[in-house]
Amino acid sequence: MTILLTILHIAVCIALIAIVLLQSGKGAEMGASFGAGGSQSVFGAGGGTTFLSKLTTGAAIIFMLTSLTLAYLSGKTGSSSIMPKTAPKPAGQQQQTAPPTQQPIQSQKSPAPAQPAPQASPAAPAVPEKK
Image (cartoon, rainbow, N blue to C red; front, side, top):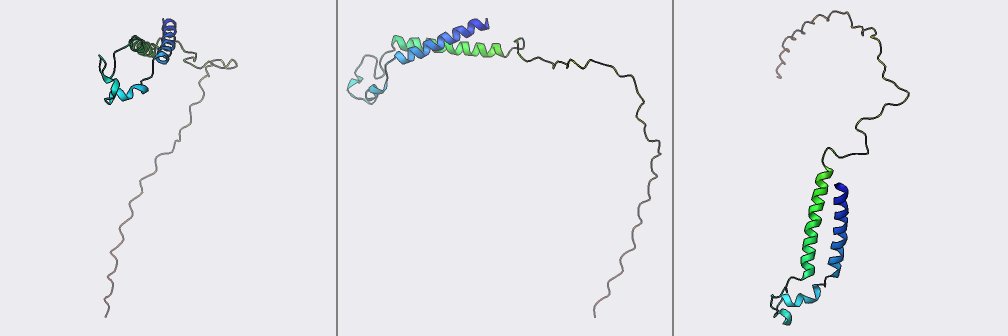
């Protein structure tokens, strides 16, 4: 399904480029929008909607829909990836279980006794007054 949508998306993209390039430029008719002589047409200053402009709108809508659909499908979790989910183990290493060895020796020291808090020093002697 993704391949079919991708092919349709590319075909619509090429068609959209061709349709836009086939349309006549609007730059020569800018005077009509400011009230110049050519503005007396049936559909107003902008002119009528041509077949190519309707075709451009349709191709643009299809292009946007295929873009959104392809973006949605690429974000699904079921999509394949070239990257493995887990790293392969090297060929030389095999999963070996080591026999239980000695437990790390914990120090058998008893906690150090709490040191008494230093006693507060006596109040500083009074400073003699100057005479």
